[in-house]
Image (cartoon, rainbow, N blue to C red; front, side):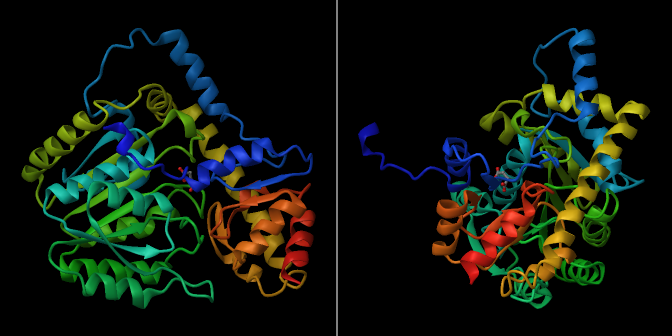
Length: 392
Ligand code: LMR
């Protein structure tokens, strides 16, 4: 039986982590998987998380099971940051904890399918795992162009997808810090997107994996809030992997917004049943650490400060790259200054990406995506010179 299984290629992005680790060149640069790095190239545990974890060690009195919803204190503490002051939209939104943002996307797609969704429209390029999850759940993927060569979001394409959608379609959007392009919709564009969803009744699924890493905590979810204010129903996947630096602890949340408050229990019960059948309940530790931060004013201030420092550092890297447009022409570096978050796409060929790796020890995704957080004062000049070398 098991010998019938054909070998699968390892996930390209995760394979890159190992390739980088195996490279012994001391000046190697990792622009691959999406983790934040400091100016020293490290990915330290947040100070707020360290303090919170210490408190958990000292005070947590049980590790007994929770339900499929996980730690609801964690979920409810997050909600005002995501949805604003009326965080439950008059009792129409409820959430649950998930294993990372991936668990939340998986649940969103599975729940949409259970509700009758047959196809999901998705802007491309996208996070490669989006397409993999859709295929694995058994929902058809329909693509539209996310961004043009000019580094601007393609509003016509997303509006065409929403307005041309069938009644049993949903549309998946990135809330902020688009992965892999870094190109987000502007406020005016979000307003048009919200109007299109409202006028068509198409179900929005919004993935918020980089909240706070773009323009700010409120700014990064302003588009999401516009959509939610306009539509009857929506699904939201949320990740704390990046904005709390909890990558391997797998901390995420999934939110459902219903037309009416009294429809919510049935919707939520289906999500619980899916979670139970998939992973039973999410891992607790990281969610509990986040809850304690958000319940404590001092820890919350520390977390917001740490997040602001990360954002400011990535902005400086982006500005440095944008200013290097003349040094490595033809790669669109000038547009990087207007983009958000960890990622940007460079129009490099497979050969150029391989040359960067082989000749310069620079690792990036095969799509040409770079993680700008992998650059800092000590390696950006080398990166720009290498780009000039392969592009010249
Ligand atoms: C990435 O895109 O690099 C991150 O979201 C990590 C992942 O799971 O792919």
